[in-house]
Length: 201
Figure (tube, one colour):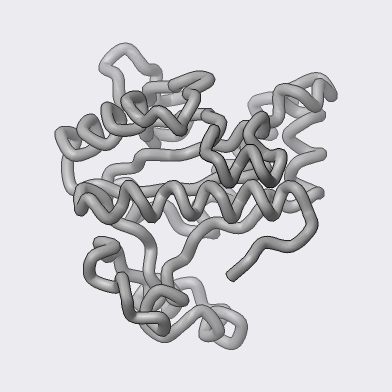
């Protein structure tokens, strides 16, 4: 699938391409919808959607066009959420908003997560801008209601990214342990956003 003329969408396409190249190495998982991407449009029950979501290694679906279509790569952040975050967290400083394009990958254990982090840091086509380590023993997890991950902001400096003029765009990659991913539901995230907004009020 080729990207549209929209620069953010081109950036999302590049981030998905880069993640696929790393996922081929077999150390991480992606979210996968067992019934196909269209199922969520008709089945709004969160419990039913959760039952249909699994986590698969890229090698399990690579080469199967139908199965690859079921991989649930993240969409661009919605405009309303972006504005809300600008006001709540960044005092309207647009340059601080670095997760318009975002993706998540998942791991069985902390050793696999660290291996992926090392690969990202060693990748010559990736320029890491920041790392927020919420898995550190020093991190106060009451700030995120017990949730933990490793949050990376980065730029993709591949030839394709430069050709599309998105090599200076910053995107966010979350490295998440599967045990946290399985309880990170859409409704749970909405409650967390409400909790975060109350703290900022």
